[in-house]
Length: 158
Length: 411
View 1 (cartoon, each protein chain N blue to C red):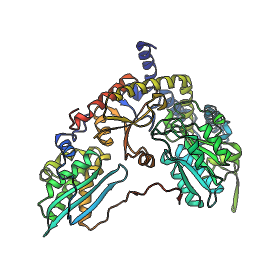
View 2: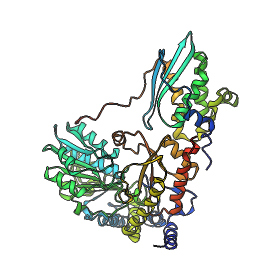
View 3: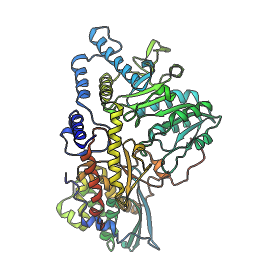
């Protein structure tokens, strides 16, 4: 029953003491990523100059996997060109699906600790939240889907 | 009861449940679905081995036997909740039962401006059908809010009732909080205002004796699979005069009397609401499940579940970082313990417990509006059945006490 090897020191450290979890003033790009079914909800912010990601941060709430994955992603992509970041995101998503090669997985550095998530289908969306949000952001996307934030109305007209 | 007596009783009960007797895990997700005793598995197999034929229309012995067994199951389901068998409609589950009321009763009885009153702690399956009924008819929905401990008081209930209220929907026991609502009192209030009362019994039918005539509810829904029966069989009780006044829910075979190219006359209640070939094997499994529950008895079931819930809650209260939703009194939980752990997300709780062989639920428990109201996005839930034992509970609390350390905290 030892199928949860992903709860290791690297992951818990990124969850407990995330380096990149803070507001980012003057961000060039900012996008909310949401897993409505489980409530993971992050806002990813990046500074991009001449096609290079010069800084990045995230805020939000969610399980350890969603938060640590976003933190590890930022560790990896800050300082890299946008296209390189997207290439690594593609490797990460394929690692989760179990189709990335060993050489590719090595390129993900610490984020490779999440490789065993492929055995826990229910947690896949937690692991890829930050990465998908970055992909959507570069594709000029809007956050989807929205979690309504309004207060309870007196009556609901359908 | 001495510890030795309890262990002997545990053993007697647990040997009836193959997955419990043979599995090396603590199954604590009983509110999601229960395990099945051998007698239920045997009854279903016996039906398909010895009596399988399409019930309700055959003119030969095998089909007549299949029909007899199906109707005997209906009688047992009626007896189980104090209803006449003619008021029992077999469905797939409580969700389908509630949808039947919404599509058939609500859609034909509500008009624009009418109000549906729904308890905020409802499972999505006793909330979304009403949102849909409102959308179809132009009615509006009002919500009754509970206190922080999950209880509803008569004053706030009455305050939301108006002369436009036509339907009140409330569960007897919330799948998150575990507290029993005073359905009899609320149904009386609803009737005084001219509304019908729809009760979701999915979490109560497995744990407490139910008498729909005493509660005086107009509809009562429950699922077989949460009370030892197979998946795919559920029950809707409705008062006969109300059922007779309702149009069919699904149209097709086995629910008609006479059909022409332009219309049909429909079979009598309850067959009017059971279109298509029925789930006879499921109904027979439910019958065996009811027999099994009766052989244990609710007195014993409640005693065991209260004992185990108290054991779990006592251990949990020793952990200052664990917070239980709802009452402090184990007797008010009906085996349902929903909780949070400081600094650990519920999905991480469930995943780590899984590696310790402890199976609990995590997430919004299909009650997102309630969790939002309680100001939490998601929680973990351990839910206990009478076939659990002390070691299941201690395996759970042991795993719970090691969670924060595994997530990198000092304790």
